[in-house]
Picture 1 (spheres, helix red, strand yellow):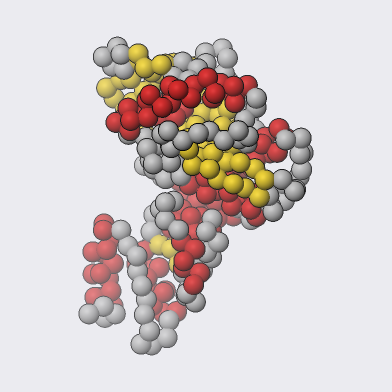
Picture 2: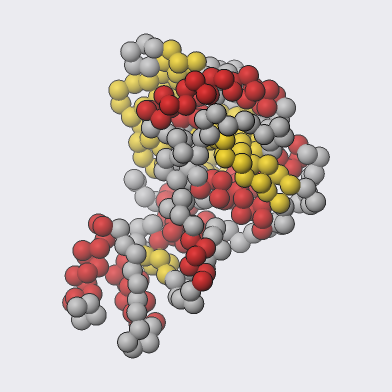
Length: 84
Length: 239
């Protein structure tokens, strides 16, 4: 993650949150690229739910997930009726 | 501060495992945020070393990568010793830490000479020391990181341990020491990158570099609450 330049995220007017076991680590990484994190949530499903709640109806939530976390997140989104 | 610090990143491609490059990012930003201009110079195999270096950072690598840089590194040994004698601030992680010692003796008994910057010797073994690790240091508080190495390092009288760690961790898993310090040269097995979750340690390095230039400036405090939070999480996590 330290080989990636996250400053590109500053080009977008978006709400950024981090989730999972390494949520705080990821927020530190973003901090060092001067990208502010709105929410740091150890439970990835909670992080996604609160991101969904924060956006306007019909707009997008983009989740960058590790492969391991992706399936659990997908199942959770199906259960909440957010994902197709 | 109307000066520009030169920060060398040694072998950025070959010696960059577990995000050790992040140490460069952390130092550069913490200097920038204090208004101190910084030039980051990558030094790869065959590249010349800049004349005036303030800080040199080297990370860990795969054993194979350490073979790729072997001859180049051997050619830099005398210069690295001179730089250390001159007070250049160095942070050497894992593989680079081992290479700054006198030698690395492989499991088969092959002796690979190091730069002799740090008074220590490393012996390869079949088992690896792997896991999260925290290290209590006298000057920079608790450092948090991750270690993964098969070499066991024994310190000589010419270095002091960077800090103390838990049994089964650190330099050799036996004497509860971790890392080594000599003048402004610091070696450690901590990945993480270590400076990301240890901002006091990062500022300690910056202070050393500025003091060497005769600039005993007070470093403007930064908001390190995120790093402290990440460190607290990591300490409570077994792996």
